[in-house]
Image (cartoon, rainbow, N blue to C red; front, side, top):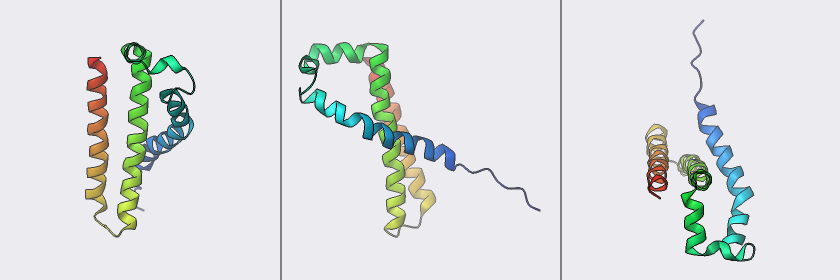
Length: 113
């Protein structure tokens, strides 16, 4: 009997599912805030900079980048397979590497605020 190798699927599905849920729940709120329909004073530079300068604001903004980026990476991987690109290992490295790079860049930029 051969030993079964552990699957990496939970590591991929967690950010994918969280990113989709996060975007579905909070993107409408972001649209309402940025258009000024709710919290009209929140779109000024001072308010936005104050929010992004606080540790909690940085955490929220990081979540707004991190989760949807990983969600999109997984969607792109599945879409590539659906379009007939069977080099799944290469596609996975590209899309997840891109998501990791964008996550790192978001972290760097947020820490500079």
